[in-house]
Amino acid sequence: MNTRRSCGECCTRLVEFGVAIRGQPILEHVNLHMHCGELTAVIGPNGAGKTTLLRAMIGELPHTGALRFIHQGNVEDSKPLRIGYVPQKLELDATAPTTVLDLFAGALSRRPLWFGTGKALRETTRSKLAETGAEHLMACRLAEISVGQLQRVLLALALTPVPELLLLDEPVTGLDQAGIELFYQTVSRLRADYDLSILLVSHDLLAAGRVADRMILVNRTVLCDDTPKKVLGDPLVARTVGFAPRVEELAADGTPDQSLPREQCEFPLEGEL
Image (tube, rainbow, N blue to C red):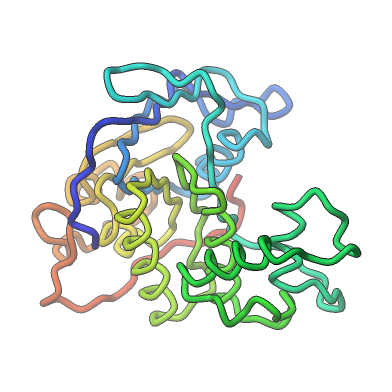
């Protein structure tokens, strides 16, 4: 867990944020603030609107309300908020020859890929991949790398250029315990290096609680917003997600208690909106 404190000089805010799909409300009256350098975990039951929230924030879904970035002195930035996004999964064609470098080129260059990649693009790709421990994958085909390796590649791409807000949607789904720990260690280091605001959606409540500064319980709207220890200890969590997490595995301030075993506590992903 990163113990570095936020500088407190900037803040991303959701104000009366809402999403409706085909006239059906999915999210309503979401009010949230995320300071730079802080990681906020989003938990909730299936269909609560967690993934919908992230998709609306990056512009994939229409929304009501406002998404704002506030600088020091409570000055709102008039420019669009720079957002990095790591999806839960990436649909890949196993027969496609697309490499990791091709993925970066398609996202960062205006030149058609068949014209090749320039030296500057290759150096940018190599540098960003190195930040997530994935430099050695640059020439690999996307369909041939592991789930954990792909997530580190997508994390590197989400940081190019460095965003003001990083959104992570179930980024460790399908990873073993070693892969989960490596991913979260990488995220903790990067948020310290860049003073990033991070919004993490997770179905693994205790794993999220170990890395987060704050946690919010969402079910159509924000039901709880506090430290992981306080949120996971709220009886409303058990009623909403269907079980009571073992909050004794978190220290008083929500940080990891290394003296206790790291058993995971999960609920299914099916049906998430």
